[in-house]
Amino acid sequence: MSPLVKIRSERDRMSAVERRIADFILENAHLLRDYSSQQLANALGISQSSVVKFTQKLGFRGYPDLKYSVGETIARSEDTATAAPSGERPEDDLLGAMLWERKAQAEEATRLLNGRDTMQELSNALAAAGKVYLIGLGEDDLHARGFAMRLSLLGITAIRHADVGRMAAQVALCQPGDALVVFTEHGKHPALVKIARYFREQRGRVITVTRHTSNPVRALADVGLAVAAYDDASYVQSLIYQSTVQQLLDTVFVHLCEHDEARHARLVQNLDRIQQMLEP
Amino acid sequence: MSPLVKIRSERDRMSAVERRIADFILENAHLLRDYSSQQLANALGISQSSVVKFTQKLGFRGYPDLKYSVGETIARSEDTATAAPSGERPEDDLLGAMLWERKAQAEEATRLLNGRDTMQELSNALAAAGKVYLIGLGEDDLHARGFAMRLSLLGITAIRHADVGRMAAQVALCQPGDALVVFTEHGKHPALVKIARYFREQRGRVITVTRHTSNPVRALADVGLAVAAYDDASYVQSLIYQSTVQQLLDTVFVHLCEHDEARHARLVQNLDRIQQMLEP
DNA sequence: TGGCCTGAAGCATAAATTATTGACCGTCGT
DNA sequence: ACGACGGTCAATAATTTATGCTTCAGGCCA
Image 1 (cartoon, chains in turn red, cyan, purple, yellow):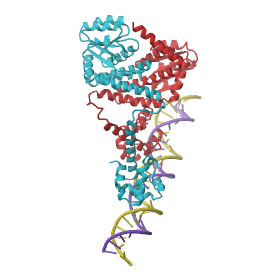
Image 2 (cartoon, each protein chain N blue to C red):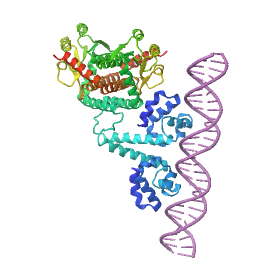
Image 3 (tube, rainbow over the protein chains, first blue to last red):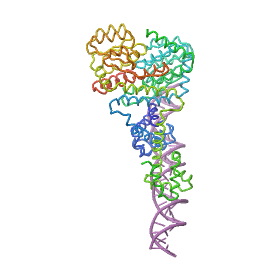
Image 4 (cartoon, rainbow over the protein chains, first blue to last red):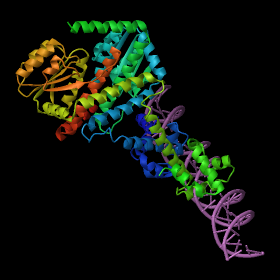
């Protein structure tokens, strides 16, 4: 994976100094060629060892390895940038293209973050649950709604609430093995923490969908999906976050469809029924 | 110039030892990443200083500089090599990747379908409207909800209903110049056709978001957004459709943000307020 | 509150890598 | 033959990178 994408995806969980290093590299990747680890440290007013440790944490053999790797990426991107001037219309509908590019980056980072195992575990938890409870507040509620609809198309009982009070009441009725899916971008909402904790105590499986940071809600998760989505403009960042969550859920959905013949059949049947309701 | 080309061009004028270095690098460029100047010297049975002098003669600042430069070249050539055969990936955690690939295709097609003019026209209609009404049924309702939230963050009055009856009642109160956004994948729902037609009669502007087909709802549109999204599996097609609609709406949203300073300011303010509600 | 733990950051220093120096050697031209 | 020259190498200087240890701040529990 591109070191820049990797850096961006980890950025949220970094300490202050590390984040400064990350930002510097992301913004000045092309200057890196002329920087030794010591110079980079000086430029940021930090110690050289912090730079080296930063690179090692990211999984590189050391500073030169990172540097080499960034060099490769720059070369690649410059190459494709100049190789594809044909597919580029003026700067008209550039806006949509740029936005999509951002989404694609976030998607890749997120896909790598949530490996095959995580997805498998999640599918199992959902498939095994008697009932699946879903909750999300604000924009997160949209994901809860959408995913609940999908689950019910598959014949999985899905219970969604946007209201924490009602959800708390519902959750009291849960059985061991049921699953709770909590959508919360920042993972800080106290009410959601309480519900998740209570659900755990009832021996339910807690699934969380949050940003790739350490946060109170995620700490309670049996399966914690992490989303990497970063942009300078906060409102763009929010769009990217949502797109990435959606992709993650879509992948889970397809996974569920294609790993169980019975469920797949039920889905096709349901879609047919919906068609028939609309058509004649 | 590529360091490899430079080496080859100078090769004839080199001494025996230098030529051996040159040949080694030309043949094993991809291994260079893991070689220090000393290791390279050992591999050839020559002294490390010869290696360094070699690099300097060629005009590099030193051995690491040459190494970095070769790395760039390799990356570039590998990139164009793998980019040419087509965007094929090995079948690793392919499910998510494949799905994303489909989405990307649909996105591009859709972007080309809804040119800059369409987007501009749409932005104008939304910006000029006193009130914006939004409606969508089933999964389309999610888009209506999401977009309504966004519009209100921008200070645009948005009224959404998932219930056709209530919406019909609301629409009766509309003013000329107001806008109605209808989300309907297939564009066939009779109730939505009626509402759109009625809205037009009241001199409102009708905006539709549908598949790229000719359908009754779209026929009534002042601005008709078209979405291209196809897949063999109907349930995958639905995912792709939704992703693409989302991207279209996101683009419109960013467009609105960035073409009006006042609205932009209001948005940032609102986001801050939301943050403050959650944080302390 | 105070003690304890954890993790982050820096300092000092070891290790490694790279660059330069100077000595040696063979070749070539005079 | 002899000196000039280019090329090579070993030794070593200089630079760069990696690591061990210390300190300090924040979280947590009694």
